[in-house]
Length: 507
Image 1 (cartoon, one colour):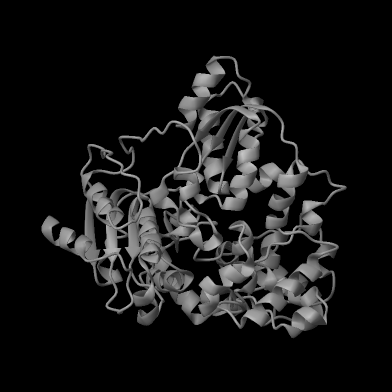
Image 2 (tube, one colour):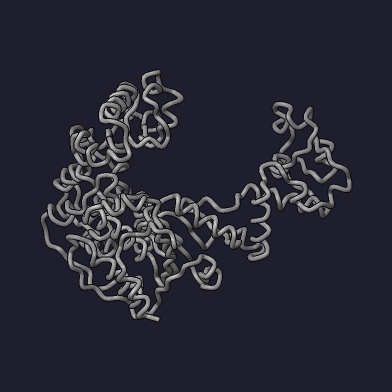
């Protein structure tokens, strides 16, 4: 959609700098920029400087004398950092990293709602109302003079920023914006000659942060165009996703068609049964929350799979892998650089303390210095016999290497070899929320939740619709195959039994 809109307006003489693309996530913005640069190679990225997330778009219109984002931007999620630097009032309120209070407070601000009303909805995970309000007061007192948070910036934008005139404004992932953010977007839209909104109400999965798909579907006037065909998945995944969609309240009816490819959807009761290593292409392995994602990562390690999260953090640390390769080279009589030697020594337990731990030791050595085994002994304080040079890396590199890490890495070498470990993993294991906007050839969805049955049963129809939106979003990330891992655990996604019947019929 974005490419089509851009081609239409640029062909009419609209300058790229007069076009703004605003989305909810960095991932969506980066994807849009990449596709735009491929479609318009005659321009560079500076020409599309107004392709940003809403927060980054707003931030650029504040001068540094008003606030320096790097110095004073305070994310409410970083509560642990606040403890260390705050006065006694904050500590007395027993803030912890997992405290929900500031998250609920931020949600109330994004909903433009009195915090007390939000508390009544979220009180199952909070302290008493008095404590909740006192924490809010303490937080505001702390950041009053020196800090602002991301929501402060949006609130100030409404009153203080006079946006430039635009020829075209494109709002992507529009279902994810909160009422507060829509207040800014309305203001921005008034400065644009043409406004385009793109979104899917069925993928509005950020209600926990205050977003409301109704603002996108009902409260923004204009002509609606419903896309009639997906470019991503085939018949099987299409039908499966529609089963989930039917349980979403107030969903806009969408009669769209799938691609010509078939694909398939299959259910499993055991992680080991899923042919992850056998199927070609990329994988998303997705859980609802971090606790279930951690279970999936443990299963993947047991299976010897090489993976990363959606932020690029790999299952086996790059620094560890470099240390292994460097030591293997030394053991064969080769040499390593100063940086490699420093890395290797950080994993070797037996060193001469007076030499290795001396302050500034590595700084004093020339960058051109090369080291073999004898050099590590003479220059770096290595305290191992000559016979030790022939030992395997797991017998030498022990510091920060747990037995489970060593065992896992040996599985990786057995399955992939060294070449694959130098490349980016083809498997991403993370939450459904983290990969929103992305896609993979194959997707595995884990149906287990960590909610008590009493809580799941008490959830009203609106809550269950929200959960189905999450599951629908995860299922529609798949291009070719979709795999459902069902737990025998009694807490599973409240999405109904129809999809299991569907899977049975497809066999």
